[in-house]
Length: 149
Image 1 (cartoon, helix red, strand yellow):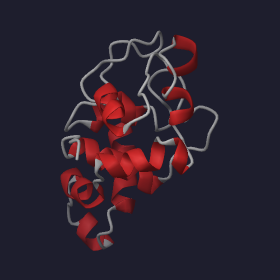
Image 2 (cartoon, rainbow, N blue to C red; image 1 turned 180 degrees about the horizontal axis):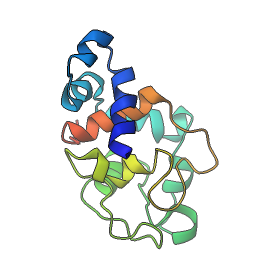
Image 3 (cartoon, rainbow, N blue to C red; image 1 turned 60 degrees about the horizontal axis):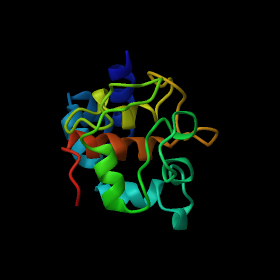
Image 4 (spheres, rainbow, N blue to C red; image 1 turned 90 degrees about the vertical axis):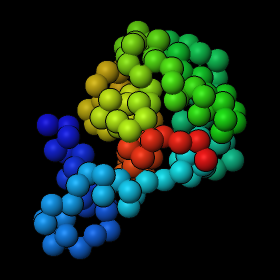
């Protein structure tokens, strides 16, 4: 079911005419059109200087109650290292990979941004949900291999 919702979400954000989507555009095509760089995602979601979404909790030391044991530090490189490679050690989502390059639907980072989250609460906790275009960029970045630019 989540894949159908994601495909519908991404089809609406892909920028292709609806006739092209209806003619069988693939998720990879939509992802390529909406993929962002990690720098774009970081600038939009993390640093305190740019209306933080994630930084408020995830720049603090790891704690199960305040940030699900995910501390991403205060730099882009630290955030990337915390997200791509490690698995969650939180009591709610332990064992799930934060980012699985090429597979957004298996990436906790993406899944925690959609509603309902597979474990714990949707992020950002207590904040407004990300918009369709922002979700499509995160999905596209992961689908395109989650590279650090």
